Image: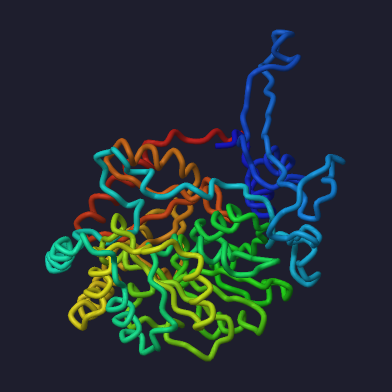
Length: 454
């Protein structure tokens, strides 16, 4: 963590380090985070050691094929050739403060919660996959599909099952290898000159856009507003908008009526509903809507059903959009076992089980929130509706490391744009696990040495 973090800088540009902010002024992506090294004249003179701070960022090629700000000749971007480089500053309406928007990559967009637990014997509160999954009946269906591995996958039945579950024509359904593949397809196949991602949220959408060569604008929702969506904060010029609902990591469920205000002709509105089946009744869902122009809804089966290793999800969109995304897919992108799982998860008994799981998670989340309310050091994002909660506490990095020593893995929050090192995301678990965690959290907080009053 930066040795002297600045909350003001963090609120303005998404990094608490002044050095990182300075490096990113005329660059696009942070390469080396702020580093402190001993040195300076003070050390030479035998006085208190001074420090030198450094952060390194890189600049992407200018999109107009001319020169960048240093005067060097650059190549032409295949995505935005012939246009001026897109910046959020140019798009930001003057009525909205510039602190909502930044254009640099900043945090590590490729960090995922599984890195917190990989190879470690820890109770997992870092990954949002439901525990004790997949259920036995689903494992049996997947196992039965293995007898068909000699044949190429045929997704027609699974696609029809998804369409029937949502009451949509099959032409509006595309099966994918998890939502992650859908983000890549959207970034590569859909035309977008000015894409915008609403943060904090799952970082994979922006990572996919950047990997495809896009310059990505950000709209940062504020902690002071409860991370609630303000449609007016999204610039009119944005022709591709990505938002999660309920949002990872904030656990905020945005009203469908607010999301609808983001849609307009000529704009693609991507709503990631990977955790919507955890919301009882799936209120605020847009998955079955066909009247919203440019709407693309993503669903994942990996969270509720414990299929992260199998990779299965789907896209719901206008037939023309589905066809464009399908053209960008490789042949047979979804395996036969994954197709069998998708079809099984659309059956009535599966939907009943998912609804019961959503009710249990609601009760378990309330138990976790009640326990966290006992800590004066912990601030919880209110109105959590996902299978996780976002908390803020001072010296969260130290608390997280102490929790690891006590056997619990929590998801760090500083890799999400718009958050900083004082944030942690906690997955909702059963009451017994939560009780053990709360005891560990109490030990972790109490073990921290008191801060100096200086």
